[in-house]
Image 1 (tube, rainbow, N blue to C red):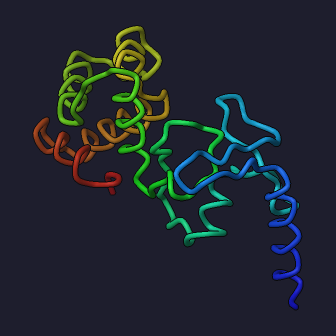
Image 2 (tube, helix red, strand yellow; image 1 turned 120 degrees about the horizontal axis):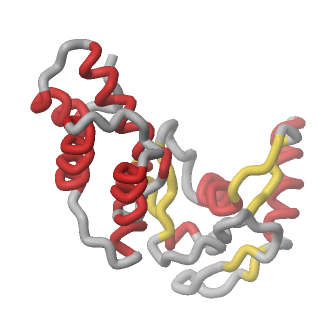
Amino acid sequence: MSDRAHHLAKASERFWSKVERKTKEECWLWMGARRQKGYGRFRVEANGHGYAHRFAYELLVDEIPEGMTIDHLCRVPSCVNPAHMEVITASENALRAARSRGVSVSPSALIERLQALYDAGVRDFATRDMKALWESNGLSRQWAQKHLKRLIEAEALGYSGEQQRYLLTKRPAVA
């Protein structure tokens, strides 16, 4: 057995000792250390802690592609049952989380609101208006910062408002 395989086997053994495993339909609750929002924390490599649900998914299903995240379909952050998970983009995950909290908003509506603030001269994602936009829609500060940065970069490249909106919705980043 290679060192990596041995290390993974030991990690797997430690992992399962911290899981309250039930039927496939039920949540498998992480009983170990948790992060602030309830997600399980699990140390796989010597270089730091990762998420328990991501380890479970990769152990039992497949590798999570670069730039993708896991959505808990059951909405239980401490659940590590891969049958309750789906690999999606971070922006889709943010929208689903917002909807689960009762916020009904479409991505294009958010982009329109962000564009309106930008057109009104807002360039700082921490302003009161920008903060109200992302907080009232259940989105993260990172979402606002990333999208505002894209608008600023698009403007620097000479793109019009319509082109800027297209870049926000269709492209991962402005080149």
